[in-house]
Length: 115
Length: 112
Image (cartoon, rainbow over all chains, first blue to last red; front, side):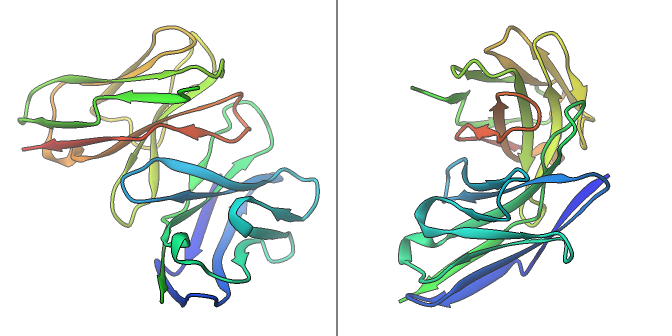
């Protein structure tokens, strides 16, 4: 069984401030982990993914996430928020085994960026 | 390159009506998925197809059926729509089961 918990359904930051979106996972086998972003009235777009190579993963738009096995976490960060980062962000987990594997999503975090 | 295309984008149904949501991908992906998105609940998997010719239930399959018509197309059918099925529906595809999924733009369905 696998699950994802995103801490904080709403996060608000000022433009230029650090963005930190939290994600903790539960998986009985080594996981693959993903962050997706959803802009209003659009589908989900992949930001970055962890697939057991480097624990620090860099994605698009200046985002990065660090896989910490001891903390079962995969938090998303960006050093300096931009107005265009305002969106909903989803963390997702998938077990590395292939048979029957599929993504399980967290409930999402709505990021607001204030001028 | 269109990616994942869903039709229609918007639909209003009356309770008890039926309809089929269409999804097609042009990335030669093996796996395809249908999710529904409801406020505060993230995305929940309705059905998926790991490869052409196979379909399996996801987390919330009741009230839905699917057909993997060929490698490109994966449709979702509501036989008798209910207000609880008001949601935004997303189709997604992936090269194989454990790789990242690519999403369509969504279908906003309202059942009155």
